[in-house]
Length: 279
Length: 283
Image 1 (tube, rainbow over the protein chains, first blue to last red):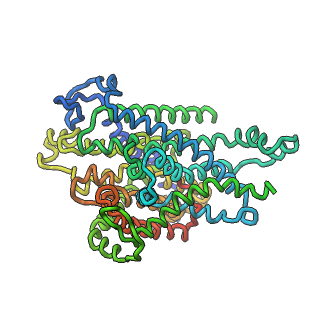
Image 2 (image 1 turned 180 degrees about the vertical axis):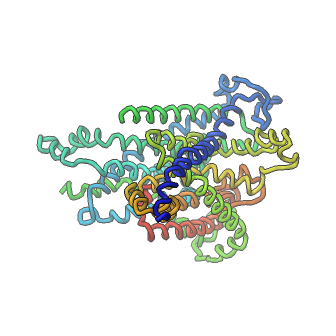
Image 3 (image 1 turned 135 degrees about the vertical axis):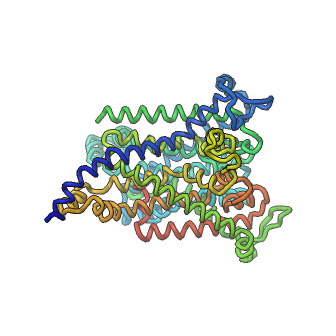
């Protein structure tokens, strides 16, 4: 019988030690590990440079806020940043509309009425799981063979291509619990399909659409592999930064990194706090 | 009439986009690997020349092996590192779950290329970490990491950790707590509860985490180029150079095709075992 009573006696205390001490300490160490390089990046954006070249060095040379004041002094960097913003907005708008439409088709229709649904599922899965370098390389091969010049257009085409599947999946997850009787009520009250969509459906699925749009924007602005194949002479931010790693990195790169981080984490923390208040 | 067409009209634009810019280029790349190209003009003619594959493999098999090794080792490190934190957030996160998940995602708020550059600073011989440790005589003065395989794996493990941690979290979060309570009611020890209830129920998530981490790592070349120096070349670097530096499109295409086939084996196994739609839960 002692074998039966033993776990009851031991479990609560051991459980508490794991849950209260070991796991939290370990988890905070992992979080520190994840945050540490970001602190380094922020610190180095305040690092003085040595010599006339004004490039970041591995050693710490003293504090300065010079680079924040001169954040736009590197024309190539500033241009690439605005290019990334324009590219992100354009591809987000297109992929959010297309991905939301696809998600609605996938949630609402089944094979007798929607043949080819299974093919779409497979293509979405393949698109998400395929190695990005293969996507970028194959697009480059096709554009070059068709004599399509690389630039903003090819970047938009490719960014929309790799965002659609993510948007569709994100929106679909939010559409799953959608109450269709609300739409039927709108029809019963004489609304046409367009009015029903804009006044009933869209407001209800808006959180999912916004989540999909944020996902698409984040994917686009951080994309390096595909963009590096397709940018030609107009390099977006990550491609430009990668290009200067060989010759030397101006400190403004870390200023932009710090700025993007601050805006992103600020938005995310706000949404976490807001979500908590609602509960 | 219009309602019967609705699903097709809704899916047509994205279907065309994915067909013309995802599937057609892939087919095009496969055909390109069988073409013979004139290096001077760049014009390619279909010759059904399969010889590109054996010659590229004999030239670059070492890079494939290096990529497999780095990606597999870094993925396993990520699985081991992120499992306990995913477990902690899922089972003990309470009201602060969203905050901790945000902390897991925090690297993604810094551009991927900048994150990798920062690791170069962290691992540099006289950088903040190694420089300080050497100054304190914890490490010998000749110690260095940058330019070695260890640096590449450290960069890969850091950059892709969220891809591993999130699917694990989702899988752990979905475990029905009543099943666990039932096990404890039946006098399962804590260890047995973990090994025989939690772990088996997490297997699909572990598999998804492996797929979502391993495949991008396998094709990655940024970490190797920035942190690995001139040695330990990975296959992604070779493919990029074939296309952008050597303009050897047929060679680059055949290497990409091999990379795609290796990835497809994993993708196919996943779809067979777990169903392709399940991947969506883990994104």
